[in-house]
Amino acid sequence: MRKWGTIDQVQLAPADAAARAAVDLGDMPEWDLTDLFPGPDSPELAAAIDRAEKDAKTFEANYKGNLLKKGNDGAFLAAAVLDYEAASDLLGRIGTFAFLNYAGDQQDPTRAKLFGDIQGKLTDISNAFIFFELELNQIPDEELAVALQNSDLARYKPWLDDLRKEKPYQLDEKLELLFNEKSLTSDAAFNRLFSDTITALRFDVDGEQLSLEPTLNLMLDPNEARRQAGAEALSKTFQDNIQVFTLITNTLAKDKEISDRWRGFTDIADSRHLANRVEGPVVEALVDAVRESYPKLSHRYYKMKAKWLGKDVMPHWDRNAPLPEKPERTVKWPEARDIVLDAYSGFAPQMADIARDFFDKRWIDAPARPGKAPGAFAHPVTPSAHPYVLLNYLGKSRDVMTLAHELGHGVHQVLAAQQGVLLSQTPLTLAETASVFGEMLTFKALLKNTTDARERKALIAGKVEDMLNTVVRQISFYEFERKIHLARREGELTSDKINELWMSVQAESLGPAIEFKPGYEVFWAYIGHFIRAPFYVYAYAFGDCLVNSLYALYDEAHPDFVNKYFDLLSAGGSKHHSELLAPFGLDASKPEFWHKGLSMISGMIDELEEMDRAV
Image (cartoon, rainbow, N blue to C red; front, side, top):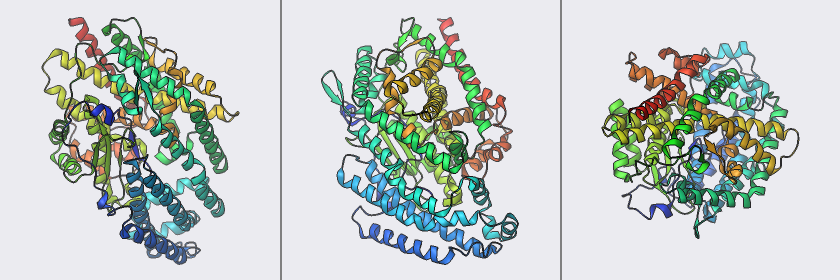
């Protein structure tokens, strides 16, 4: 059974209340969680927990030990799956409410206690369901084939097929119960330690104590002195706390190794590939294609950017610096809303209509606040409710793109909800499709309306940098994780060793035009993906390359593209990526698929070089 109350899609987005205070960004929404429960102390929440406990006991009494006896009875199995799905929906509401309430202010001890208490209750309740997937997988194939002739059960065949793929890695029921209960004091505990530590950190920038978000935001400051001050403050605070981050990294890598060993996974990333419903060779084809492209993508672009900044090489704090001839303007919230909705509407009015509900019905928490979870994410909640989006909006152009990204997730989640809990959960390989496509729509709409040559250059350069961060950086992160988890199998890693592995992938991916100043070696410490979801990061590159290929088809007026695109999103997790891409004539198992996606980034860099030659 799924772990509820976790972040499903995440994109880090610099933002903070301290930085926002300097400018009026307009009236920004804060989310309304009463659609889930009236409040943390509400009788409705208590009653839901009580009902979940009773339903779990009833479910166990009705079905445990009976699935094998009635393995060919489609009506019986369909009833069991429907009850399981209903229980999952209720647990999802409870867990998500506790998580989102906590994300609103992670420094509030009352919210933290509620989140911890509910995590504990849900873990206890979910123990009653452990048997279900194990016993389903013990039903002989021939009996299940007979049962699947029942139309109500046949609807869940994709879920049952995916469940069958997990059979070789499942343990007996007692061990699964132990793994489930111990998660609270193992990976979940260290995840929470990481989140609480990151939220509490303060960075001294010229005498001002800033949290992580505004300090990261300084990397986008037009003033190089401010960028340098921010980078050095990050380095110092990370270094002061590096033993904590080293402990967390070592513990979680070892915890994963133990789990993988007991379950029988061979490669360190196999469990992620299984969860993503993607084959290892497909991921390796992506990784190889991106690594081969480093010289013509990141190396070439950063060499050009260094020249724009008047340098032969640029320090690491200049990597995301704005172009000198194009000062960053502030985009107020109402304008950001209109930009994204107009871009969505230009593609399909239905897409804009779905996205508009997030604004009008307060499904977004936009302003930055002290203690609020950093970055940005979209949480699907459960099909009986609706998704929620968290942002830390500062008014930067990249914040507009983050809004477009997270609303893409939200639209995807709304469309997939019709599949129900068990079939709506999109694997990570496809979970970034709508989000990255939403960014591309917004970028193309802005570019179309830009006539000034300098603004056009700045827009294209900004998009290239975002794509390099999404593709090149994320694949380098994947390579870093591989090195960490492999090295951890040989023994505990020192901070210096982790730093060394980090620097090895940074130099390879970013190229000789970036000069890594002292202190950059500890910048791995704040990246939450390594902690929350090992090997998640390649999904961003997968999504970006996939969307580039899809958008190229859209530009070429591929027949019935919009309807096929909506079919892809509406399928949720009910189809394999190969089935969903087939109507577009795309095949992710072939190297040319990835090179086609990467060629769009290369083409934009070509255009920037042409602009330079024309000056």
